[in-house]
Amino acid sequence: MGMTMTQKILAAHAGLEKVEAGQLILVDLDRVLGNDITSPVAIREFHNMGKQGVYDKEKVTMVMDHFAPNKDIKAAAQCKMCREFCAEKEVTHFYDVGQMGIEHALLPEKGLVIPGDAVIGADSHTCTYGALGAFSTGVGSTDMACGMATGKAWFKVPSAIRFYLTGTLPEYVSGKDVILHIIGMIGVDGALYKSMEFAGPGVASLSIYDRLTIANMAIEAGAKNGIFPVDEETLNYVKGRSDRTPAIYEADEDAVYEKTIEIDLSTVKSTVAFPHLPENTKTIDEVGEVKIDQVVIGSCTNGHYKDLYEAAMILKGKKVAKNVRAIIIPATQDIYLKAIESGIVKIFIEAGCVVSTPTCGPCLGGHMGILAAGERAVATTNRNFVGRMGHPTSEVYLASPAVAAASAIMGKIAGPGEVL
Amino acid sequence: MEYTGKVIKYGDNVDTDVIIPARYLNTIDKKELASHCMEDLDKTFVERVQDGDIMVGGWNFGCGSSREHAPIAIKESGVPLVIAKSFARIFYRNAINIGLAIVESEEAAEAIEEGHTVRADLSGGKLYDLTTGAEYGIEPFPAFISKIIENGGLVESVKKGIIA
Image 1 (cartoon, chains in turn orange, green):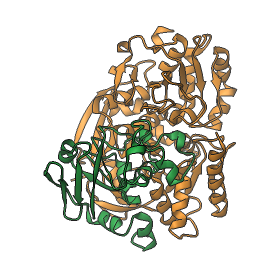
Image 2: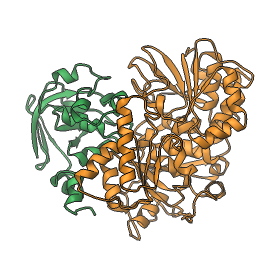
Image 3: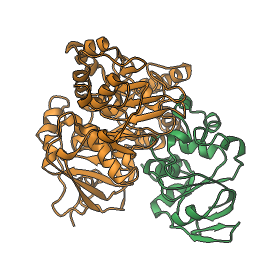
Image 4: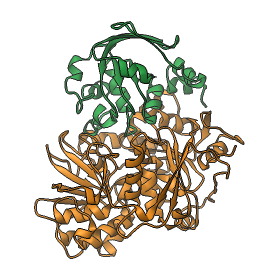
Protein backbone atom coordinates (compact mmCIF):
# COMPACT_ATOMS: atom_id res chain seq x y z
CA MET A 1 0.00 0.00 0.00
CA GLY A 2 1.53 3.30 -1.10
CA MET A 3 1.60 6.70 0.58
CA THR A 4 -0.13 9.96 -0.32
CA MET A 5 2.00 13.05 -0.98
CA THR A 6 1.25 14.34 2.54
CA GLN A 7 2.17 11.00 4.11
CA LYS A 8 5.50 10.97 2.25
CA ILE A 9 6.47 14.43 3.51
CA LEU A 10 5.43 13.50 7.06
CA ALA A 11 7.37 10.20 6.95
CA ALA A 12 10.52 11.99 5.75
CA HIS A 13 10.24 14.55 8.55
CA ALA A 14 9.63 11.87 11.18
CA GLY A 15 12.67 9.85 10.08
CA LEU A 16 10.44 6.96 9.04
CA GLU A 17 10.39 5.00 5.81
CA LYS A 18 6.67 4.53 5.92
CA VAL A 19 3.68 5.93 7.78
CA GLU A 20 0.03 4.95 7.74
CA ALA A 21 -3.15 6.90 8.30
CA GLY A 22 -3.96 7.05 12.01
CA GLN A 23 -0.36 6.62 13.19
CA LEU A 24 0.86 9.16 15.77
CA ILE A 25 4.27 10.62 14.91
CA LEU A 26 6.68 13.34 16.00
CA VAL A 27 7.66 15.56 13.08
CA ASP A 28 10.75 17.76 12.62
CA LEU A 29 9.68 21.24 11.56
CA ASP A 30 11.22 23.44 8.86
CA ARG A 31 9.34 26.50 10.09
CA VAL A 32 7.26 27.57 13.11
CA LEU A 33 5.03 30.60 12.55
CA GLY A 34 2.95 32.88 14.71
CA ASN A 35 1.16 36.23 14.44
CA ASP A 36 0.41 39.11 16.81
CA ILE A 37 -2.72 37.37 18.18
CA THR A 38 -1.43 33.84 18.71
CA SER A 39 2.25 34.50 19.51
CA PRO A 40 1.64 36.28 22.85
CA VAL A 41 -0.08 33.14 24.23
CA ALA A 42 2.76 31.03 22.78
CA ILE A 43 5.38 33.27 24.39
CA ARG A 44 3.65 32.86 27.78
CA GLU A 45 3.67 29.06 27.36
CA PHE A 46 7.27 29.11 26.08
CA HIS A 47 8.29 30.79 29.32
CA ASN A 48 6.19 28.28 31.28
CA MET A 49 8.27 25.51 29.66
CA GLY A 50 11.32 27.08 31.24
CA LYS A 51 13.16 27.26 27.91
CA GLN A 52 15.82 29.89 27.25
CA GLY A 53 16.44 29.93 23.50
CA VAL A 54 14.35 28.98 20.47
CA TYR A 55 15.32 25.76 18.63
CA ASP A 56 16.43 27.62 15.50
CA LYS A 57 16.62 31.41 15.16
CA GLU A 58 16.25 31.13 11.39
CA LYS A 59 13.15 28.93 11.47
CA VAL A 60 10.99 30.64 14.10
CA THR A 61 8.94 33.32 12.33
CA MET A 62 6.58 36.00 13.62
CA VAL A 63 4.45 38.35 11.53
CA MET A 64 2.58 41.33 13.01
CA ASP A 65 -0.42 41.36 10.69
CA HIS A 66 -3.74 40.83 12.47
CA PHE A 67 -4.24 43.97 14.54
CA ALA A 68 -1.29 45.85 13.01
CA PRO A 69 -0.67 48.69 12.41
CA ASN A 70 -1.86 48.58 16.03
CA LYS A 71 -5.58 49.13 16.31
CA ASP A 72 -5.57 50.02 20.01
CA ILE A 73 -3.40 50.12 23.12
CA LYS A 74 -3.90 46.44 23.96
CA ALA A 75 -3.00 45.38 20.40
CA ALA A 76 0.09 47.58 20.63
CA ALA A 77 1.09 45.83 23.86
CA GLN A 78 0.75 42.41 22.19
CA CYS A 79 2.97 43.47 19.26
CA LYS A 80 5.47 44.92 21.74
CA MET A 81 5.59 41.58 23.57
CA CYS A 82 6.37 39.77 20.27
CA ARG A 83 8.93 42.41 19.23
CA GLU A 84 10.80 42.16 22.53
CA PHE A 85 10.74 38.35 22.53
CA CYS A 86 12.13 38.17 18.99
CA ALA A 87 14.83 40.72 19.80
CA GLU A 88 15.86 38.84 22.95
CA LYS A 89 15.87 35.41 21.25
CA GLU A 90 17.52 36.86 18.12
CA VAL A 91 14.75 35.59 15.85
CA THR A 92 15.78 36.41 12.25
CA HIS A 93 12.36 36.43 10.63
CA PHE A 94 10.37 38.95 12.66
CA TYR A 95 8.18 41.08 10.39
CA ASP A 96 6.87 44.35 11.78
CA VAL A 97 5.03 47.29 10.22
CA GLY A 98 7.02 48.43 7.18
CA GLN A 99 8.19 44.92 6.24
CA MET A 100 5.22 42.84 7.23
CA GLY A 101 2.45 41.59 5.02
CA ILE A 102 -0.35 39.12 5.61
CA GLU A 103 1.60 36.09 6.82
CA HIS A 104 0.42 33.50 4.28
CA ALA A 105 1.18 35.79 1.35
CA LEU A 106 4.44 36.99 2.91
CA LEU A 107 6.09 33.63 3.67
CA PRO A 108 5.86 32.24 0.11
CA GLU A 109 6.91 35.64 -1.30
CA LYS A 110 10.03 35.72 0.91
CA GLY A 111 10.90 32.12 0.03
CA LEU A 112 10.45 31.05 3.66
CA VAL A 113 8.48 27.97 2.59
CA ILE A 114 9.54 25.78 -0.32
CA PRO A 115 8.35 22.44 -1.73
CA GLY A 116 8.81 19.50 0.63
CA ASP A 117 8.86 21.54 3.85
CA ALA A 118 6.92 20.67 7.00
CA VAL A 119 5.50 23.81 8.59
CA ILE A 120 3.24 24.62 11.52
CA GLY A 121 1.71 28.01 12.18
CA ALA A 122 -0.43 29.29 15.01
CA ASP A 123 -2.96 30.44 12.45
CA SER A 124 -5.53 28.19 10.85
CA HIS A 125 -4.74 29.36 7.31
CA THR A 126 -1.18 28.03 7.54
CA CYS A 127 -2.48 25.28 5.24
CA THR A 128 -1.93 27.79 2.38
CA TYR A 129 1.61 26.53 1.68
CA GLY A 130 0.27 23.23 0.41
CA ALA A 131 0.03 25.14 -2.88
CA LEU A 132 3.84 24.94 -3.01
CA GLY A 133 3.91 21.19 -2.38
CA ALA A 134 4.76 21.58 1.31
CA PHE A 135 3.01 20.01 4.30
CA SER A 136 1.69 22.87 6.37
CA THR A 137 -1.06 23.11 8.91
CA GLY A 138 -2.58 25.39 11.51
CA VAL A 139 -2.09 24.69 15.20
CA GLY A 140 -2.67 26.54 18.47
CA SER A 141 -0.34 28.66 20.55
CA THR A 142 0.83 25.84 22.84
CA ASP A 143 1.86 23.79 19.81
CA MET A 144 3.68 26.89 18.54
CA ALA A 145 5.45 27.25 21.90
CA CYS A 146 6.46 23.58 21.82
CA GLY A 147 7.60 24.02 18.21
CA MET A 148 9.68 27.10 19.08
CA ALA A 149 11.31 25.20 21.95
CA THR A 150 11.88 21.79 20.34
CA GLY A 151 11.40 22.13 16.57
CA LYS A 152 8.85 19.32 16.74
CA ALA A 153 5.11 18.75 16.64
CA TRP A 154 2.97 15.64 17.13
CA PHE A 155 0.58 14.60 14.39
CA LYS A 156 -1.86 11.89 13.62
CA VAL A 157 -1.07 10.86 10.04
CA PRO A 158 -4.10 11.87 7.98
CA SER A 159 -5.99 9.89 5.39
CA ALA A 160 -6.82 11.77 2.21
CA ILE A 161 -9.50 12.78 -0.23
CA ARG A 162 -8.22 13.16 -3.79
CA PHE A 163 -9.57 15.92 -6.00
CA TYR A 164 -8.92 14.98 -9.60
CA LEU A 165 -9.02 18.14 -11.70
CA THR A 166 -9.57 18.22 -15.45
CA GLY A 167 -10.25 21.04 -17.93
CA THR A 168 -9.51 24.73 -17.52
CA LEU A 169 -11.43 27.50 -15.74
CA PRO A 170 -13.76 29.78 -17.74
CA GLU A 171 -13.01 33.51 -17.97
CA TYR A 172 -13.56 35.46 -14.70
CA VAL A 173 -13.67 32.21 -12.70
CA SER A 174 -10.71 31.67 -10.35
CA GLY A 175 -9.30 29.53 -7.54
CA LYS A 176 -11.73 31.07 -5.05
CA ASP A 177 -14.69 29.77 -7.03
CA VAL A 178 -13.09 26.31 -7.17
CA ILE A 179 -12.63 26.06 -3.40
CA LEU A 180 -16.08 27.53 -2.61
CA HIS A 181 -17.55 25.03 -5.09
CA ILE A 182 -15.73 22.19 -3.29
CA ILE A 183 -16.75 23.34 0.22
CA GLY A 184 -20.34 23.71 -0.99
CA MET A 185 -20.15 20.13 -2.22
CA ILE A 186 -18.46 18.39 0.77
CA GLY A 187 -19.41 20.75 3.63
CA VAL A 188 -17.46 22.53 6.37
CA ASP A 189 -16.44 19.20 7.91
CA GLY A 190 -16.28 17.28 4.64
CA ALA A 191 -12.52 16.76 4.96
CA LEU A 192 -12.30 16.76 8.78
CA TYR A 193 -8.85 15.54 9.98
CA LYS A 194 -7.94 14.63 6.37
CA SER A 195 -5.66 15.85 3.59
CA MET A 196 -7.15 17.32 0.46
CA GLU A 197 -4.79 16.19 -2.30
CA PHE A 198 -5.21 17.88 -5.66
CA ALA A 199 -4.18 16.00 -8.79
CA GLY A 200 -4.98 15.53 -12.45
CA PRO A 201 -4.27 17.35 -15.72
CA GLY A 202 -6.33 20.39 -14.61
CA VAL A 203 -3.69 21.35 -12.03
CA ALA A 204 -1.28 22.61 -14.70
CA SER A 205 -3.81 25.24 -15.84
CA LEU A 206 -4.08 26.76 -12.34
CA SER A 207 -1.67 29.58 -11.54
CA ILE A 208 0.29 29.38 -8.29
CA TYR A 209 -1.99 32.14 -6.96
CA ASP A 210 -5.14 30.12 -7.71
CA ARG A 211 -3.52 27.17 -5.93
CA LEU A 212 -2.61 29.35 -2.90
CA THR A 213 -6.26 30.44 -2.64
CA ILE A 214 -7.52 26.86 -2.91
CA ALA A 215 -5.06 25.43 -0.35
CA ASN A 216 -5.72 28.42 1.95
CA MET A 217 -9.36 27.43 2.42
CA ALA A 218 -8.78 23.69 2.93
CA ILE A 219 -9.33 24.42 6.64
CA GLU A 220 -12.83 25.67 5.78
CA ALA A 221 -13.64 22.07 4.81
CA GLY A 222 -12.13 20.94 8.13
CA ALA A 223 -8.98 19.56 6.46
CA LYS A 224 -5.59 19.19 8.11
CA ASN A 225 -3.94 20.34 4.88
CA GLY A 226 -4.53 20.87 1.19
CA ILE A 227 -1.69 20.02 -1.15
CA PHE A 228 -0.77 20.36 -4.83
CA PRO A 229 1.82 18.43 -6.82
CA VAL A 230 5.01 20.33 -7.64
CA ASP A 231 5.33 21.27 -11.31
CA GLU A 232 6.99 23.88 -13.52
CA GLU A 233 4.59 26.59 -12.26
CA THR A 234 5.64 25.87 -8.64
CA LEU A 235 9.36 25.80 -9.40
CA ASN A 236 9.17 29.01 -11.44
CA TYR A 237 7.49 30.72 -8.49
CA VAL A 238 10.00 29.45 -5.93
CA LYS A 239 13.07 30.21 -8.12
CA GLY A 240 15.24 33.00 -6.77
CA ARG A 241 13.30 33.28 -3.50
CA SER A 242 15.28 30.78 -1.42
CA ASP A 243 18.81 29.34 -1.32
CA ARG A 244 17.43 25.98 -0.26
CA THR A 245 16.75 23.20 -2.78
CA PRO A 246 13.09 22.17 -3.15
CA ALA A 247 12.32 18.56 -2.23
CA ILE A 248 9.74 17.15 -4.59
CA TYR A 249 7.46 14.45 -3.23
CA GLU A 250 4.91 12.63 -5.33
CA ALA A 251 2.04 10.44 -4.20
CA ASP A 252 2.65 6.73 -4.85
CA GLU A 253 0.63 5.28 -7.70
CA ASP A 254 -0.94 2.83 -5.28
CA ALA A 255 -1.62 5.47 -2.60
CA VAL A 256 -4.93 4.87 -0.86
CA TYR A 257 -7.56 7.63 -0.80
CA GLU A 258 -10.83 7.61 1.11
CA LYS A 259 -12.43 8.77 -2.10
CA THR A 260 -11.69 10.58 -5.35
CA ILE A 261 -13.83 13.51 -6.44
CA GLU A 262 -13.53 14.56 -10.06
CA ILE A 263 -13.94 18.20 -10.95
CA ASP A 264 -14.07 19.50 -14.50
CA LEU A 265 -12.77 23.06 -14.06
CA SER A 266 -14.56 24.22 -17.20
CA THR A 267 -17.92 23.66 -15.45
CA VAL A 268 -17.11 25.74 -12.34
CA LYS A 269 -19.10 28.98 -12.11
CA SER A 270 -18.59 32.14 -10.07
CA THR A 271 -19.67 31.04 -6.58
CA VAL A 272 -20.77 32.95 -3.46
CA ALA A 273 -20.96 31.57 0.11
CA PHE A 274 -23.95 33.00 1.98
CA PRO A 275 -23.99 33.62 5.76
CA HIS A 276 -23.08 32.07 8.10
CA LEU A 277 -21.04 29.12 6.82
CA PRO A 278 -18.63 28.76 3.88
CA GLU A 279 -20.65 25.70 2.75
CA ASN A 280 -23.78 27.78 2.06
CA THR A 281 -22.83 28.31 -1.56
CA LYS A 282 -24.83 29.50 -4.53
CA THR A 283 -23.64 30.03 -8.08
CA ILE A 284 -23.83 33.62 -9.28
CA ASP A 285 -26.98 32.92 -11.36
CA GLU A 286 -28.76 31.71 -8.19
CA VAL A 287 -28.01 34.57 -5.78
CA GLY A 288 -30.97 36.86 -6.50
CA GLU A 289 -31.15 40.44 -5.24
CA VAL A 290 -28.79 40.96 -2.27
CA LYS A 291 -28.00 44.62 -1.56
CA ILE A 292 -24.65 45.34 0.09
CA ASP A 293 -22.97 48.05 2.18
CA GLN A 294 -19.31 47.10 1.87
CA VAL A 295 -16.81 45.23 -0.28
CA VAL A 296 -13.45 43.96 0.96
CA ILE A 297 -10.84 42.76 -1.54
CA GLY A 298 -7.74 41.35 0.14
CA SER A 299 -6.81 38.85 2.94
CA CYS A 300 -4.52 35.80 2.99
CA THR A 301 -7.03 34.17 0.65
CA ASN A 302 -7.20 36.79 -2.12
CA GLY A 303 -4.72 39.61 -1.48
CA HIS A 304 -2.19 38.72 -4.17
CA TYR A 305 -1.38 40.98 -7.12
CA LYS A 306 -3.31 38.68 -9.47
CA ASP A 307 -6.41 39.09 -7.29
CA LEU A 308 -6.13 42.89 -7.21
CA TYR A 309 -5.46 42.99 -10.95
CA GLU A 310 -8.58 40.96 -11.72
CA ALA A 311 -10.66 43.32 -9.57
CA ALA A 312 -9.05 46.40 -11.16
CA MET A 313 -9.84 45.25 -14.70
CA ILE A 314 -13.51 45.15 -13.73
CA LEU A 315 -13.46 48.47 -11.85
CA LYS A 316 -11.48 50.30 -14.57
CA GLY A 317 -13.37 53.41 -15.69
CA LYS A 318 -16.34 52.59 -13.45
CA LYS A 319 -17.55 53.87 -10.08
CA VAL A 320 -18.32 52.11 -6.83
CA ALA A 321 -22.07 52.34 -6.16
CA LYS A 322 -23.35 55.08 -3.88
CA ASN A 323 -23.55 53.89 -0.25
CA VAL A 324 -21.01 51.11 -0.79
CA ARG A 325 -17.58 51.28 0.90
CA ALA A 326 -14.98 49.40 -1.16
CA ILE A 327 -11.79 48.52 0.73
CA ILE A 328 -8.76 47.15 -1.14
CA ILE A 329 -5.98 45.55 0.92
CA PRO A 330 -2.80 44.42 -0.86
CA ALA A 331 -1.43 41.47 1.14
CA THR A 332 2.24 42.56 1.23
CA GLN A 333 4.41 45.62 0.73
CA ASP A 334 5.76 44.17 -2.55
CA ILE A 335 2.23 43.65 -3.85
CA TYR A 336 1.28 47.18 -2.73
CA LEU A 337 4.27 48.67 -4.56
CA LYS A 338 3.58 46.66 -7.71
CA ALA A 339 -0.05 47.83 -7.60
CA ILE A 340 1.12 51.44 -7.39
CA GLU A 341 3.70 51.09 -10.15
CA SER A 342 1.37 49.27 -12.54
CA GLY A 343 -1.34 51.91 -12.07
CA ILE A 344 -4.04 49.71 -10.57
CA VAL A 345 -4.08 51.69 -7.32
CA LYS A 346 -5.04 54.70 -9.47
CA ILE A 347 -7.86 52.67 -11.00
CA PHE A 348 -9.13 51.77 -7.53
CA ILE A 349 -8.97 55.31 -6.18
CA GLU A 350 -10.61 56.81 -9.26
CA ALA A 351 -13.40 54.25 -8.90
CA GLY A 352 -13.98 55.40 -5.31
CA CYS A 353 -12.22 52.60 -3.41
CA VAL A 354 -9.89 53.04 -0.45
CA VAL A 355 -6.51 51.27 -0.61
CA SER A 356 -5.06 50.16 2.73
CA THR A 357 -1.67 49.10 4.02
CA PRO A 358 -1.37 45.29 4.40
CA THR A 359 -3.37 43.92 7.36
CA CYS A 360 -5.75 41.06 8.20
CA GLY A 361 -7.92 43.81 9.73
CA PRO A 362 -11.54 43.46 8.60
CA CYS A 363 -11.44 39.73 7.74
CA LEU A 364 -11.70 38.79 11.40
CA GLY A 365 -13.55 41.89 12.56
CA GLY A 366 -10.41 43.51 13.93
CA HIS A 367 -10.28 46.95 12.31
CA MET A 368 -10.25 48.75 8.93
CA GLY A 369 -13.83 48.00 7.93
CA ILE A 370 -16.05 46.72 10.75
CA LEU A 371 -19.74 46.20 9.97
CA ALA A 372 -22.62 47.76 11.93
CA ALA A 373 -25.75 45.83 12.94
CA GLY A 374 -27.58 44.47 9.90
CA GLU A 375 -24.94 45.53 7.35
CA ARG A 376 -23.82 43.24 4.53
CA ALA A 377 -20.41 42.81 2.93
CA VAL A 378 -19.13 40.92 -0.06
CA ALA A 379 -15.59 39.89 0.84
CA THR A 380 -12.79 37.92 -0.81
CA THR A 381 -11.92 36.64 2.68
CA ASN A 382 -12.38 33.11 4.00
CA ARG A 383 -15.03 33.01 6.74
CA ASN A 384 -18.58 34.26 7.06
CA PHE A 385 -19.39 33.09 10.59
CA VAL A 386 -21.75 35.04 12.88
CA GLY A 387 -20.06 38.32 13.84
CA ARG A 388 -16.93 37.56 11.84
CA MET A 389 -16.59 41.09 10.38
CA GLY A 390 -18.37 43.02 13.09
CA HIS A 391 -21.81 43.09 14.71
CA PRO A 392 -23.37 39.64 15.28
CA THR A 393 -26.31 40.60 13.02
CA SER A 394 -24.06 41.72 10.14
CA GLU A 395 -23.56 39.40 7.18
CA VAL A 396 -20.54 38.37 5.11
CA TYR A 397 -20.81 36.88 1.61
CA LEU A 398 -17.61 35.18 0.43
CA ALA A 399 -16.67 35.57 -3.23
CA SER A 400 -13.85 35.94 -5.76
CA PRO A 401 -12.13 39.29 -6.48
CA ALA A 402 -14.03 39.48 -9.82
CA VAL A 403 -17.43 39.04 -8.13
CA ALA A 404 -16.48 41.43 -5.30
CA ALA A 405 -15.46 44.13 -7.81
CA ALA A 406 -18.64 43.70 -9.86
CA SER A 407 -20.70 43.80 -6.67
CA ALA A 408 -19.02 47.06 -5.61
CA ILE A 409 -20.14 48.67 -8.88
CA MET A 410 -23.69 47.30 -8.75
CA GLY A 411 -24.30 47.84 -5.01
CA LYS A 412 -25.58 44.27 -4.81
CA ILE A 413 -24.07 40.84 -5.33
CA ALA A 414 -23.26 40.67 -9.03
CA GLY A 415 -21.13 38.69 -11.46
CA PRO A 416 -18.54 40.25 -13.81
CA GLY A 417 -20.92 39.59 -16.72
CA GLU A 418 -23.34 42.18 -15.34
CA VAL A 419 -20.86 45.07 -15.52
CA LEU A 420 -18.64 44.30 -18.53
CA MET B 1 -10.45 11.52 35.17
CA GLU B 2 -14.03 12.03 36.33
CA TYR B 3 -16.38 14.97 35.93
CA THR B 4 -19.96 15.54 37.06
CA GLY B 5 -21.88 18.62 36.00
CA LYS B 6 -24.96 20.21 34.54
CA VAL B 7 -25.20 20.47 30.77
CA ILE B 8 -25.21 23.62 28.64
CA LYS B 9 -26.01 22.56 25.09
CA TYR B 10 -25.37 24.10 21.66
CA GLY B 11 -25.80 22.95 18.04
CA ASP B 12 -23.54 22.10 15.08
CA ASN B 13 -20.52 24.07 13.83
CA VAL B 14 -19.95 26.14 16.98
CA ASP B 15 -17.03 28.18 15.61
CA THR B 16 -14.18 29.81 17.50
CA ASP B 17 -15.42 33.27 16.42
CA VAL B 18 -18.58 32.83 18.51
CA ILE B 19 -16.70 31.10 21.35
CA ILE B 20 -14.47 34.18 21.64
CA PRO B 21 -15.00 36.98 19.09
CA ALA B 22 -11.79 38.37 17.52
CA ARG B 23 -12.55 41.84 18.88
CA TYR B 24 -11.46 40.49 22.29
CA LEU B 25 -8.22 38.91 21.05
CA ASN B 26 -6.24 41.99 21.99
CA THR B 27 -5.68 40.36 25.38
CA ILE B 28 -4.26 37.05 26.65
CA ASP B 29 -5.75 37.53 30.12
CA LYS B 30 -7.67 34.31 30.81
CA LYS B 31 -10.34 35.89 33.05
CA GLU B 32 -11.03 38.65 30.55
CA LEU B 33 -11.35 36.12 27.71
CA ALA B 34 -13.76 34.06 29.84
CA SER B 35 -15.90 37.15 30.50
CA HIS B 36 -16.79 37.22 26.75
CA CYS B 37 -17.09 33.45 26.22
CA MET B 38 -19.89 32.42 23.79
CA GLU B 39 -21.00 36.08 23.60
CA ASP B 40 -22.06 36.15 19.94
CA LEU B 41 -24.01 32.88 20.22
CA ASP B 42 -25.45 33.04 23.73
CA LYS B 43 -25.29 36.25 25.73
CA THR B 44 -26.65 34.46 28.83
CA PHE B 45 -23.76 31.95 29.01
CA VAL B 46 -21.39 34.00 31.17
CA GLU B 47 -24.17 34.77 33.66
CA ARG B 48 -25.54 31.25 34.01
CA VAL B 49 -22.42 29.10 33.75
CA GLN B 50 -21.46 27.41 37.03
CA ASP B 51 -18.13 25.83 37.95
CA GLY B 52 -18.16 22.24 36.75
CA ASP B 53 -20.84 22.67 34.07
CA ILE B 54 -20.35 20.46 31.02
CA MET B 55 -20.71 21.86 27.48
CA VAL B 56 -22.33 19.71 24.79
CA GLY B 57 -22.13 20.50 21.07
CA GLY B 58 -23.00 18.92 17.72
CA TRP B 59 -20.83 18.28 14.68
CA ASN B 60 -17.54 20.12 14.01
CA PHE B 61 -17.32 21.86 17.40
CA GLY B 62 -14.63 24.58 17.48
CA CYS B 63 -14.31 25.03 13.72
CA GLY B 64 -12.57 28.03 12.21
CA SER B 65 -9.67 29.99 13.62
CA SER B 66 -6.75 28.35 15.45
CA ARG B 67 -7.15 30.72 18.40
CA GLU B 68 -6.28 28.85 21.60
CA HIS B 69 -8.14 31.68 23.31
CA ALA B 70 -11.31 29.65 22.54
CA PRO B 71 -10.63 26.53 24.66
CA ILE B 72 -8.94 28.81 27.23
CA ALA B 73 -12.13 30.92 27.52
CA ILE B 74 -14.29 27.80 27.94
CA LYS B 75 -11.97 26.27 30.56
CA GLU B 76 -11.59 29.53 32.45
CA SER B 77 -15.41 29.87 32.53
CA GLY B 78 -15.37 26.82 34.81
CA VAL B 79 -16.26 24.21 32.17
CA PRO B 80 -13.83 21.26 32.48
CA LEU B 81 -15.30 19.08 29.72
CA VAL B 82 -16.85 19.45 26.26
CA ILE B 83 -18.81 16.57 24.69
CA ALA B 84 -19.54 16.84 20.94
CA LYS B 85 -20.46 14.70 17.95
CA SER B 86 -17.14 15.74 16.38
CA PHE B 87 -14.46 18.38 16.93
CA ALA B 88 -12.62 20.55 14.41
CA ARG B 89 -9.02 19.35 14.38
CA ILE B 90 -7.20 22.44 15.67
CA PHE B 91 -9.67 22.84 18.55
CA TYR B 92 -9.22 19.12 19.32
CA ARG B 93 -5.44 19.40 19.72
CA ASN B 94 -5.62 22.78 21.47
CA ALA B 95 -7.98 21.30 24.07
CA ILE B 96 -5.62 18.38 24.71
CA ASN B 97 -2.62 20.70 24.84
CA ILE B 98 -4.15 23.05 27.44
CA GLY B 99 -5.90 20.37 29.49
CA LEU B 100 -9.57 20.94 28.58
CA ALA B 101 -11.12 17.47 28.52
CA ILE B 102 -13.04 16.51 25.38
CA VAL B 103 -15.20 13.55 24.46
CA GLU B 104 -16.35 12.67 20.95
CA SER B 105 -19.66 10.79 21.01
CA GLU B 106 -22.39 11.18 18.43
CA GLU B 107 -24.88 9.18 20.45
CA ALA B 108 -24.34 11.02 23.74
CA ALA B 109 -24.20 14.49 22.17
CA GLU B 110 -27.49 13.77 20.37
CA ALA B 111 -29.38 12.44 23.38
CA ILE B 112 -28.13 14.54 26.29
CA GLU B 113 -30.27 17.66 26.75
CA GLU B 114 -29.70 21.11 28.20
CA GLY B 115 -29.94 21.04 32.01
CA HIS B 116 -29.29 17.30 32.39
CA THR B 117 -26.71 16.20 34.92
CA VAL B 118 -23.93 14.13 33.38
CA ARG B 119 -21.12 12.10 34.91
CA ALA B 120 -18.11 11.38 32.72
CA ASP B 121 -15.63 8.67 33.66
CA LEU B 122 -12.95 9.13 31.02
CA SER B 123 -10.56 6.50 32.35
CA GLY B 124 -13.41 3.98 32.59
CA GLY B 125 -14.67 4.96 29.13
CA LYS B 126 -18.25 5.75 30.24
CA LEU B 127 -20.69 8.66 30.17
CA TYR B 128 -23.77 8.59 32.41
CA ASP B 129 -26.79 10.84 31.93
CA LEU B 130 -27.88 10.94 35.57
CA THR B 131 -31.14 12.70 34.63
CA THR B 132 -32.35 9.91 32.29
CA GLY B 133 -30.23 7.01 33.53
CA ALA B 134 -28.76 6.44 30.06
CA GLU B 135 -25.19 5.17 29.66
CA TYR B 136 -22.79 5.69 26.77
CA GLY B 137 -19.48 4.01 25.98
CA ILE B 138 -16.64 6.32 24.89
CA GLU B 139 -13.48 5.62 22.94
CA PRO B 140 -10.32 5.98 25.00
CA PHE B 141 -7.59 8.34 23.74
CA PRO B 142 -4.56 6.80 22.01
CA ALA B 143 -1.73 6.09 24.51
CA PHE B 144 0.44 8.97 23.25
CA ILE B 145 -2.33 11.53 23.80
CA SER B 146 -3.28 10.04 27.18
CA LYS B 147 0.34 10.53 28.18
CA ILE B 148 0.14 14.25 27.32
CA ILE B 149 -3.13 14.61 29.25
CA GLU B 150 -1.88 12.63 32.26
CA ASN B 151 1.23 14.82 32.39
CA GLY B 152 -0.89 17.97 32.55
CA GLY B 153 -0.78 19.08 28.93
CA LEU B 154 1.88 19.78 26.32
CA VAL B 155 3.87 22.37 28.30
CA GLU B 156 4.42 19.96 31.18
CA SER B 157 5.20 17.15 28.75
CA VAL B 158 7.95 19.25 27.14
CA LYS B 159 9.26 20.21 30.58
CA LYS B 160 9.46 16.55 31.57
CA GLY B 161 11.25 15.69 28.33
CA ILE B 162 8.43 13.50 27.02
CA ILE B 163 8.55 15.58 23.84
CA ALA B 164 11.99 16.96 23.09
